[in-house]
Image 1 (spheres, one colour):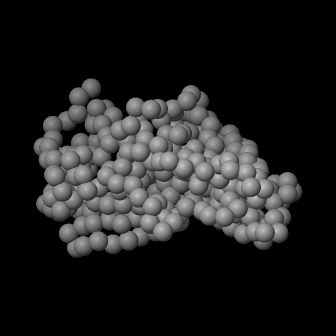
Image 2: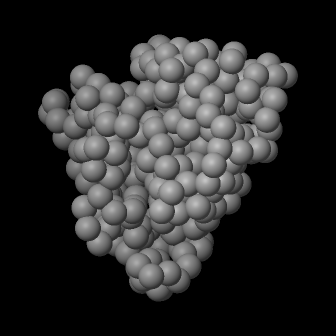
Length: 298
């Protein structure tokens, strides 16, 4: 199928992009990597009157380390993050999460900002940003504002961005110290959207107890979610198998899976808890090995 007619704008700067969005408002749609929007246009599930292409806005394409925070411009491609030297050593969860996004061609074109703004509950970036205390900077005609990633998402494919705002960057706090993390997901085929996915991060204190814990899930609610009750159960405890089981049982209260063509709600709930335990076991093992001087992934 072919998309419905639309006017096409290709601003060369963020300022021009904001001006275009302010001029056309709800009638306009931003095009980043196009990996979600272009199929929607082709199936006529989206029909903007104006398409504002950000691919010439070079100032949105950057990736830098700023005092322990990874600062990612909205037009940075997934592949650029995946290829960042030392990323797996610093945060395996982030590296493995990005590697789980679609196929190579999708990672080559898709953008970090586009994924966050699309707010697909089965996408990896929203969960990764939640787990790493993400902050977003957005720019509009009224100026710039910063919001926590958890304030960005509302429900399926819906964010708190105003129609005339453009996502500029996301900032993630990378873990330091005796930390282990991982990202695992289940899909029918490699590259498909996840039936369920889990990111886990454990930071161990000198005595082996959990100083910090993060557990995020995708595909099991109307948005990516942090299982905060499970995290709280882990912090301050020794992460033995019994403690991990207790934390996994608390995942139930954080998720609200629904039935669809990929599986029933009960199946998704089961898969989510199985993956959560696998992820926590792997994160624990990696953190413990870091304590022994192992130079493997964090």
